Image (tube, rainbow, N blue to C red; front, side, top):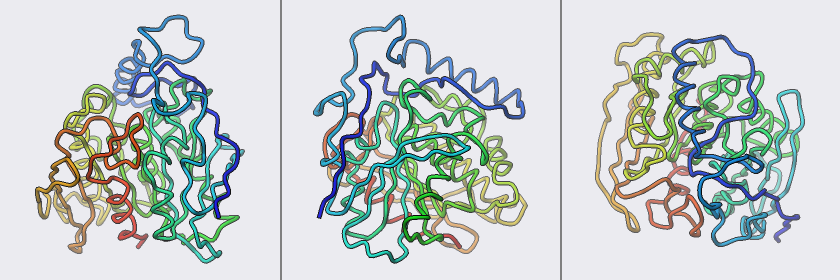
Amino acid sequence: MRDVSARFGVATLVVWTGCSTSTGTFDSPSDPILDAAAEVSTDAMADGEAVGPGDAETEGSATDVYPDMDNDGMDLEAAAGDGTLLERSYVGPEGTRDYLLYEPAGYDGTPRALVVALHGCSQSASHFATASGYNRLADQHGFIVVWPEQSLLANTALCWNWFLPGHQRRDVGEAAVIAAIVGEVGKTHALDPKRIHAVGMSAGAAMAVVLGAVFPDVFASIGSVEGCPFQGTPCVGSASVLPAATLATYVVSAMGARARPVPLFAIQGSLDINVPPANGDLLVKQWVLAADVVDDNLSNQSISSFPHHVSDDSAHGYSFRRSVYVDGAGKDFIEYLEVKGLGHAWPGASVSLAFSDTQGPSATEGSWHFLEAHPMP
């Protein structure tokens, strides 16, 4: 039986399809190279490309970010499956965020896997849930889904602030809030601690990568669709100004004493002009180079920086190249899909909405099958 509460409201925005600047940040140690790169990214995202309500100037007319729905919100009925969709809010020392929680059909209180699904810029939790169809897949496989929602006060385009150092930490900021939401869900629902995963689209994908870097002890594996490398600014509009080897050191440093190779599923569209394809390549290279260090504390090719196997395929409209990297034990560790013709969108979407594409391969099915196969060691 479906239990859907009142609609999750979303303000009408004048938005660009990329990311936006934040209205606040947190103190963190200064890194001149990273600070300079972040400034480039922030400038690129703010130059008339992301405008919040109340800003003095806008360029052109307002973008209809929900072309098939009302702009003041999306009916939660469209986001639900056959289970129960709940509205909740987390309030804690790390911050405050609303979120949706989906209990799959047949949930009986036994420990389940949890997927944290993070929306992109100008989306809401319900928008991403509707487009991706993750809740209906959860009904089939019995996992729980949590949908954190960015606050308009934190970012005028509803982007997760993945690019700001204050949100790339364990103790404060948005990464900490999302981890705290997982902890809160664990108090009311039976979760399998070895099967907690994060996946996202665009800015949500970049934040999922942040979670993998700063909480490798919490998230068993992560998924990125049209996302960015960890601290890999500017990303929006161009690739990171830093090489993969340097970016890998940021991952190793962020993981600290909890360091381990965190499995990664990634999709990158060849026609994405918001997050250009070079970012997908950099993310994969960053992740495999970091894993090569953290598995034995040496950069020694114990995990190869080259894919173990590469194949070309097609699915429901798009052709794609699938590259698989393996860890030191020979097990699949990174799965990277480069989709020819895909723009800045979630492929294989359930419905045609902004930042979604109904042509395949399915990011929903592909990411879940990867996450499911990679529990915490």
